[in-house]
Image (cartoon, rainbow, N blue to C red; front, side, top):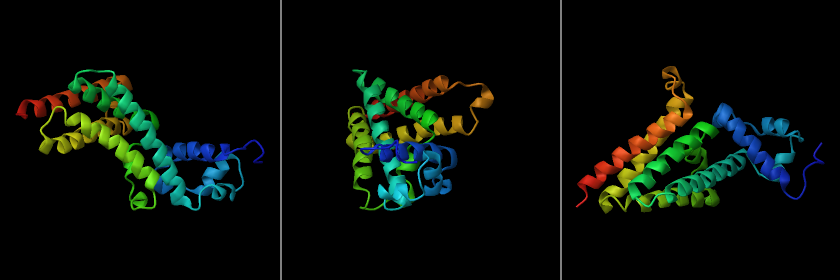
Amino acid sequence: MTGKYHHGDLRAELVRVALDLIAERGVDGFSVAEIARRAKVSPGAPYRHFPDRDSLVAAVATEVAHQLADEVERAAGEHDDPVEGLAAAAGAYTGYLIRQRVGMDLINAEVLQGPRYADLHDQTRRLTDQLLLRTMQVAAPADALELMEQLFTQAHGYGTFWLNGVFTKHGYTPALVVRKSARAARVAVQGYRHTTP
């Protein structure tokens, strides 16, 4: 049953399948047994790569943080104007959340806090640090962190309203929600820029 996997392929497959399951059911609905069933391996196979359930969840969260950091950085990097870069970054976050159904909610899950998950924390810092550096280009140092928090909150909120069906009732498409998220971010950033000495 496990013959198709070799040279570490099973680990990556388990992370991929686990991401799909968490997107469907959330962290509380996640089980290693279900991951093994979906990956078509024995119930014990995942434990050869992950010592326990939380380690597999952490691997998924680390992958999400890595993907998000890449997407946000790529979107922001397409703009010379820092305001437009931050707006694009917010839109990229919203788009990712709509597609993958997970984001900062998984990365910051209570079970993943503490020093045990250093790789996750490194990727999370990469995501937040790059956004913080960009907010410092438009906001006073004392306001940059608050602006970053606002952008993450808005971007996550737009994606969540799509996932929860709030925006679908209005006939919004994912592309429109992404544009609305970017527009809201632009307004927020311009507000901070306006108050920066």
